[in-house]
Length: 364
Image (cartoon, rainbow, N blue to C red):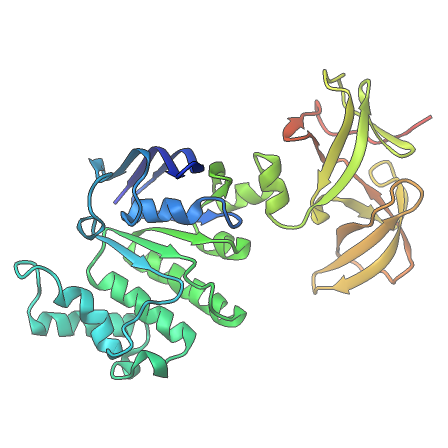
């Protein structure tokens, strides 16, 4: 079941929380709405579910406009962060609940309900806990029950609001893998809200990064990570080094070093340079690619790579985070050399595009 979100705006009083949001979600795709608190991701999810109504714009499921349709008529499964299980019901009865309250003409008979719930219990690996009550379950088990209950009515779309946010790290990892396997098996269309970047990258087919009621980027996880389309995405998605410099003429200056840009930008003045730790060229010997001296402050071996914190020597005041792959881990205090050819330059939110790679050169 495809979802078309067309020009959705939402205001609470004078506060605009969604700004002309448009997004197409193909049938069978799993999409993560990722962003900090206040980005509008949960409001958008609730509008898709019918739990909130947009101020303007349209929601269509497989071409049918459901913008003013009641939540119960949208055939959407919704999983809340805190499970929302019925405490007085067993696991079996919680999962069966949605089936038992269907209109009489749509309601399966008792035998069919039992068969479906039994199958779902096996699918979520909780058949042995069918007669227990929510208070007797762990957090991970409760979330599996909540997912099974949402799937029992065979929803066209499954929506999840921070489904693993209340669980500890190890349980979250296990449930993420399990949810992805379940999605591959059932091929339902799914949208989930998260502020956890690792969760979004691991589970989703597509990541939608939101900020202040806007979509900053909607892309495959790898592209969001390696090719951020805005400064916000670059800074939000994982660790990044930021160096302040100045553009003068056709060159970018940091301290006593300069990088020819290949052309003279219209903008002249202070800019920010961004590099992810693994984008920093690093070597034990000085070279054209790595001419800038640094000293190792911290070295943390991580197996196939070493995470380093290094202090620039004489050319910048703030330490940098870098990744060294292969070879022996350097010791604290060791002198290394780095290069910044893979950097991105920004004047505020506007990216300054060099023509080709930034070619490092010593200043005169």
